[in-house]
Image 1 (cartoon, rainbow, N blue to C red):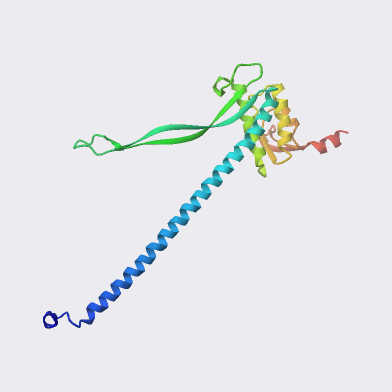
Image 2 (image 1 turned 90 degrees about the vertical axis):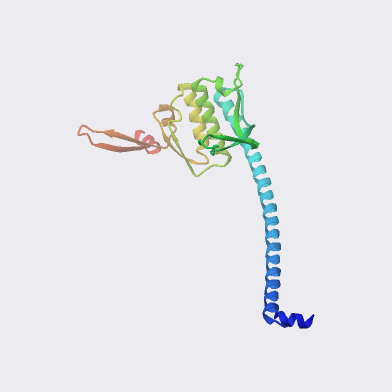
Length: 236
C-alpha cells in the first residue's frame, strides 16, 4: 500500500496536510462563530421579550391614567356621565396576492399564505347624563367637540408637555360650555404653557397676554399685545 501511495504522489505530501489543517481550523472557527451567533440571537429574543412586556405594562398603566383623567374632565364638561378609552382587537384574514398569471398577467390568489392578523385599536365609550347614549357616533357635533377636548386635555395632564398650542378648539362651543372650557384651560396652564388661537371672548378673558393683528387706515398690519395684569393696574 505504501508503494502504491508513493506511486500516486499522495504519500508524504505536505500540501495535503497543510490544506487539511487549514480546513480544520476554518471549520472550528466557523463553528465558534455559529455558536456566538446562536447565543446572541437568544440574548436578543430575551431582550425583545423584556421590551414587549415593559411596553405592554407602560401602555396599560398610561391608558388607566388617561381614562381616570378623561372621565373626570368629561364629567366636568357635561355635568356628569362617564367616558373611557377601550382597547379593541379586530381579527382579519391576511391574503397574499401574487401578480403573476398563467400567461396573461391575471392575478392569482395564493390561499396557502392565508393568515389571521390581529389589529389593535382604541375606541371611545361615552355615557351622557339623562340621555341613553353610549356611543361616540350618536353624539351631536358640539358634544363630539367637547368629548375631543376632554380627551386632549386628559392626555396632556398625564404627562404634561412644556407647552401646548391649541388652534380654534373652542370654535364650536356655546357660552355656557366656553366657561367650562376656560376652567379646564386654567387648570391645564398650571402644568404647561399654553398658546391659544381663538376668537372666543370667554377664552380670551382667561389669558395672561393677548396678541392681535389690526390694520390701520393706511392698510398696514400691526401686531398689538395686551398684558392683563398691567392693563388692570393702568385702569385703576
